[in-house]
Length: 480
Image (cartoon, rainbow, N blue to C red; front, side, top):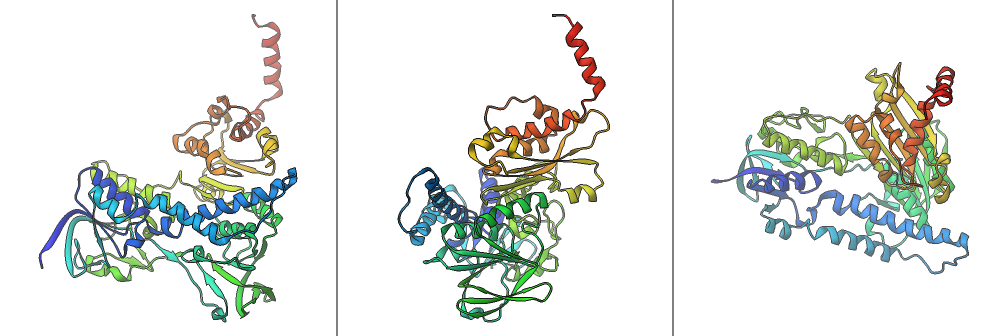
């Protein structure tokens, strides 16, 4: 069978696949993009992940703010319409889908084939009984939500992010399994719309990747919104269409109301359709073996996005694609480095985290200082009523001149934290010192001024009595 040849073949059209396919296309290469169906173009992010979830969260936040306006004398009437909210979600997806669909991408010059691809050699794939070859191939097949078997699950509606946005009515008692970002974000959103939400997790804290200083503060905020947390616990059985049994780590059992279950238990990888062995691609468990260039054991096959099995974020796929594009086109090769990576959990308030965690700093034996503060010193927080926001920074530990310390990592808990912390992300990646943050004049009153407050407090600790004495001397006897 005659093979059709391309410069690059990309399997998967989500954040990982679209990014590298369009990048190579812009440089004039002949690129083939493959996905199973036209509905999958745009990947999890557009279809069942970031775009619908953030649209849904925005709708719930608008309703929550309208209800809070009653504090100022405004009367809010009417009944929340979940179908109207879901239609809003679909409309937001429709806007983005205008430039993430097969017709649009073909007009841009991409070759697109729909169907299931599998490797037939180290540089060839088969799809729809035809063969295609390329110098390099990128696997960007994404991931899917992890599901578990629950006794009695057939008595109740169980959802993941793949189908929860198809709900037509609001569950009265909604159980969320897992206390990671997806469950926390959507749990708060459904709670604000009127569901009684219970979040269950086997661990002792929510958002396990976050520092307890941040995650514990967020949990308190969510509890104030009447969200229940059952930690060190797991669901054991569904008793009926309205009741479930929860078992704690100590063996205690508890019956709670339940009309629906959401599984936010992480993501799984599946490469069974690809016939990786034919391409000489080795796996380790359910992951593809990769080096730091995202290269498989077949030097001409690479992986991008969730399929790489490291950071499962859309912007991680962007990071992968920038690395691949550089390494495809430049003689100076780069390696994957998450030293300055950042992410945001879109609760209200948001959690924004970047750089090294305290655990990583200890593992790497990097000398550091931990700086903590709340937003009570921020006038912007006072006017906008989020004084219980938190900021956590890790900076270099300096024996002398702490002002020369660089920012190593940290987190912010505050409304709009994902925007507020961008300056800190830049400071971390560009090696900016805390003195440079101190020297900046922030417009008043802005929330980002907390960066300056935190580092000012640290620098002032170095101000010794003898320094104050010298300063007074200069002031008293210095020339005018």
